[in-house]
Image 1 (spheres, rainbow, N blue to C red):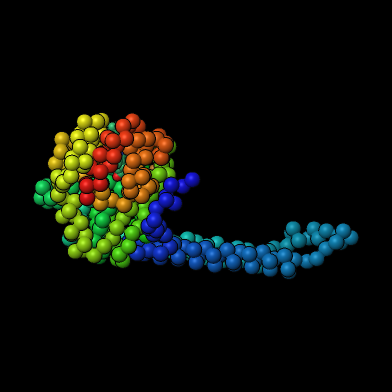
Image 2: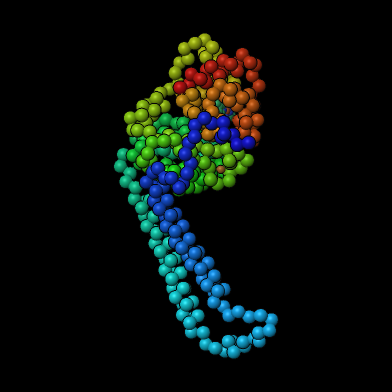
Length: 329
Ligand SMILES: [Cu+2]
C-alpha cells in the first residue's frame, strides 16, 4: 500500500514537464540525448538489416569461400573508420550539451533570492527560511512555499545519513551528505504544487520521505511567510488550552518545537504551524483529525520504523491534544 494514495491533492512530479527554468535546461539535455541516441539506434538496426539482406546466400552444398580471408576489405575498413569518426562526434556533441547545461544551471540570476536551509532527517525534511535579520527567520517541515519567478537557493545538509533532494518539475537531484553543505538553485516559473522525494536510499522509510513545494505568486508567498513567522496563537477555547497542557506535559516537548511555548526541541518537525500544512509524516498522510489522531497514538503503524514513539493517551487527553494541534494555524 502506498500511503500517498490517501492524499486528495495531486502534486506534480514529472521531469518531462518542467515548470521551472532549471528543470527546462535539464529537460532539453534529456530530449537532445534521447533524440541522438534514438537516431544512432535506428542507424544500427538499419545497418544490421542491410547486412543480413546483402550477405551472399549459401546452403549446405555451397563450398566455403576461403579466399575471402585473404582479400583486402577496403570498403569495410572505410565504413568502420567513418562510423568511428561519427560516433566520436556524437559523443563530443553529448559532452558539449552536458557542459552547456551545467553552465546554464550555474547562471541562474540570484538577485532577490529566497534562502532556505534544508536538512534531511530519517525520514523527514526540516526547512529553515533564512533572513539577513535573524528575527525574521522561521522553521517548517516537509512543505516549502516559494514565490513564482523568484530564485530560491536551497542549502542542503544532512543530520544522519546521505539523502538526496529531487523535485523533478523544478530541478535535478542533489545529495545531502552529513558533514557537508551543498546548494541547489531553482526557480518555479509556474504556480502549482510540486512533489519532491528523497532520491537516495536512506533506510526503512526512505520511500516515505516526500516533500511538497507550493509555488505561488509573490504576495501570497509573503503572506504565508509572515504567518509562519508568528509564534503559535494562544488557544481560545478551554479544550484546546487543556490540549496544550497535555502537549507540554508529555514527551512531545523532548522532540518538537512550538514557538511561544516551552517546547523547543528539534528532533522532530517544528509544529508551530502544523495546521497550515497539508500533510503529515513527510508528505504521506492528509493532515486531518483522523490521521493526526492515528499518528500520535501509534505512528509506527502508519510509518513503521519512524523515530517517534507511540503515545498511549486516554481518549479525553487525545481529543484535547488534537483540538490544540488544530489551532496551530
Ligand atoms: Cu532517502
